Length: 388
Ligand code: NAD
Ligand code: MG
Image (tube, rainbow, N blue to C red; front, side):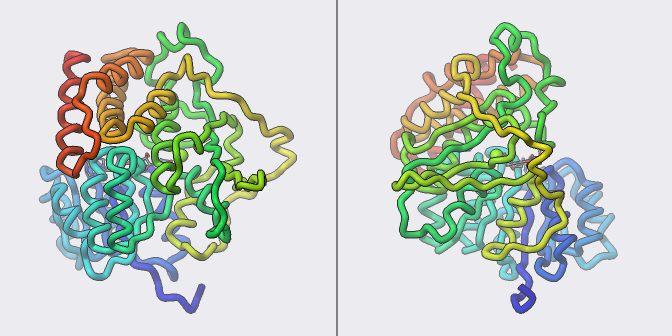
């Protein structure tokens, strides 16, 4: 790839789990990538440290109270400092940026992703909530602005890798693999007593708190089902989920001749991050290699939809369409936060989401402002249910 110019990248959410791993990839491949923009929210010290190392054109600290602190720390460096969420949507439009890695967590990532697409920037998408909330709008905008959305989520990266060279071949169906999370095989009674400390211990992946809770409820897989629909233009019946506790097969595509292609590797998010950033190239890496002898069996199970209700709820939202996935997402963000604050029990998570889905006004063909409104309405109603 030495003949290619370096790719100029903005990382939104650079202080998070995906953001810091993306910077590890960049650090190991300095000749291929230049950092133009870094953004963070709470962790000002880490953002400052990252800025001093990677010397971006600009940084944004979303939390406005930390603006002066960051500004002063970077006063001697040639780096522009901005604050507030609007500033994120503005800096992504900078002429010099080729690609934007969206690694902000939750609905908060939607606006800046839309701004980047409208500015014609290629997208490396980690923020799956963007496609869950407004998949139809975001994918049609991407098409209108000739923007490719490269998946960072490991399952979707797997599907994308399996589709290389298959442009003319129809997908019959896809199987998204799921580890099953820390509570695989547990009963509802057991789950009624679990605490956040247990839910935060994921067996195979080290991730931010929100997605770790989503993995323990299987909502993460539900969000990924919806994400897959929009990324790969699938019907709900073309998407299936299979529990695969070893997290070695990252997902599978089945074609019309019955042939299946799977992508495998040790669970390490740096791999899909690097694939998205470097696409269409594969860069050499020193990530540990898979050893068959350490995994004498790869196993598969059906998800327990009776115990883990979030997954069927996500399928229901997907089938319903309109703003239903936006409602599902907003309710989920509120209940996950409440669970992390010990305000509700684990089994209340799907119960409250289901209630929100049946109460918030359904909109069949939402425009951007309808999503904003549905998100707001759902959050208020869900907080009411919880009493916060
Ligand atoms: P994280 O909580 O570790 O990091 C989130 C980042 O977003 C931080 O930089 C934080 O400062 C920033 N942020 C949070 N709220 C913000 C706000 N309101 N405005 C601006 N910035 C804000 O999360 P993560 O685990 O890195 O996940 C990021 C996204 O990637 C999520 O959408 C998640 O679903 C997706 N994802 C993560 C993984 C993983 O392994 N961590 C895997 C697949 C997909
Ligand atoms: Mg995933």
